[in-house]
Figure 1: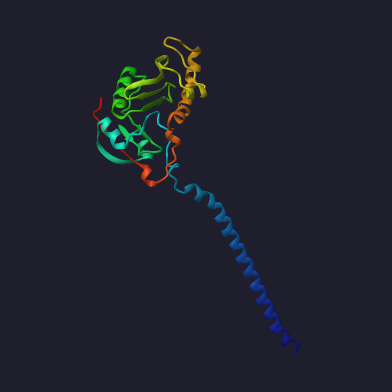
Figure 2: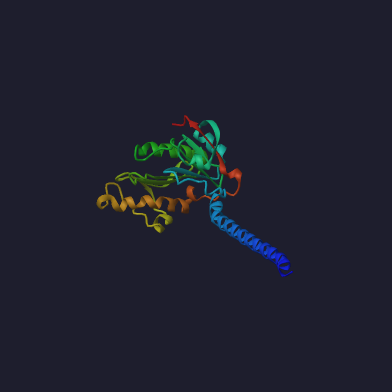
Length: 240
């Protein structure tokens, strides 16, 4: 009789043991799943699309044009073969010209078609004055990562109000130094005036984006507010 009564008890005990093991395994699996989900969460957050995160490093040379439409800029540059182009593609500098959509009242232009004061400062002057006569207020920025040559200029209706360019020596210094240049601590030199080993002059290279941000926009720090602002145009030109 006792052995008969013991059998159900043993079956119940075995069932309880099986359930207990099952709960342990289930809890272990849930813990692993939760841990893997927590590990994956930061990666997912990094992959979240953002207009700003898609922007590459800033170009070495660009224009900032105020109060003009992208179409007016296109006409001023004589650009043809136009095609849509994203900021990320345009700022790589692989096109002759990239024209951004209007952002915060400014249109950014970059590309291989922009002049380089290191090669020919006179050609740079002529190019900028011609564009400014057509679109009004134009700003120019250049910063060579290789040589640390640098330049900036502001023009209104074809007239230079301020310009400075250094290419191993000062090759362009026109107009009165602006307050933002003083605030960023730019080291400026007159024609024929050489800094010791050029180190003081070269230090301006890293300050070009700071000046751009005060005068207008730093392309690498632009915050795009809509998908429409993320697409500009690119093309070639017979301007010069």
